[in-house]
Image 1 (tube, helix red, strand yellow):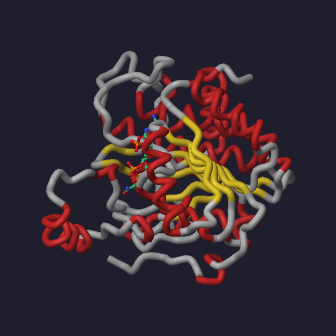
Image 2: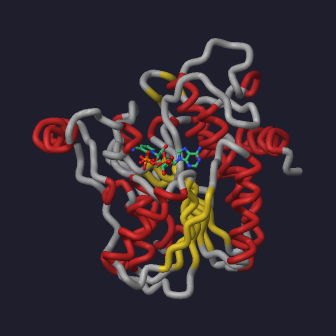
Image 3: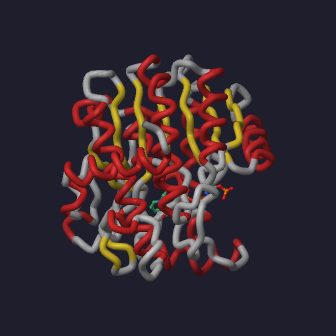
Length: 317
Ligand SMILES: NC(=O)c1ccc[n+]([C@@H]2O[C@H](COP(=O)([O-])OP(=O)(O)OC[C@H]3O[C@@H](n4cnc5c(N)ncnc54)[C@H](OP(=O)(O)O)[C@@H]3O)[C@@H](O)[C@H]2O)c1
């Protein structure tokens, strides 16, 4: 596998004092490392977490390492639109100006199930919850411009374990067809990418820049291995590393690039990818930006149709 793409030390030392970022799923994996880096650089970070106690525990741990860290922990359950509305209202009340929103939280390969509002779990949590959240925070992002929105997509928006990434408009929530959890994950991650593309188009000229990213194949809770850590370090991690698995810090690089690199402003709506096991060999070395190997990812009509369908589903029109 090629070596991971890394952000320059210059960007990682940029002073972010006075800037405020919202990171969903900031208590774990890629979101945790992203939040930690932004806090180290002086930013205020609102951590949107579904388990507040765990969020507070993680925030306390970061404060031990970075005593100046400005962290706020707010409850956010993306599988419940009333929680998304309550979270957004709190953020808007405390922070009417934002410099960044990182739509990072996510679930993968969940069994067939529904969010509180009746959406298929992965489409509901990964896409619809973040779609509504973004709409509700757009005024604050405009007020805080220049600002950024970063959606965590995945290389699996191309193919997820052989299932091609597509948006199944005839049955977005698997009400009439056989459920396939990998296909549903691919749909949700393609939706994250298309949401960023359409949002970038809609927010042109506002100073809000939008991106989607693929963090790579990253060792996080998303792919929990139920073996003791010492055994994982000895056996599992070195073997998976050979297959391209990277560490959370490396997995956070594409997000940090999309948030901090000045050139990102020139291509709002673009896709940024870490190295990853794409089916398309030419894409495996990643790219900031990368032209997605999935043709649907470039279809503006699909992006617009998804936006319209999402608006109706979350009743935000
Ligand atoms: N790891 C990879 O290889 C990989 C590859 C491609 C894309 N990604 C994407 O990267 C993002 C971050 O994942 P990760 O790898 O860092 O996994 P992770 O360690 O499992 O983190 C996922 C985060 O999302 C939160 N979350 C899950 N469901 C939620 C809900 N209903 N409401 C609010 N928060 C919820 C989790 O909260 P709890 O801690 O409470 O569960 C956790 O904080 C995801 O969008 C994922 O699709 C990851």
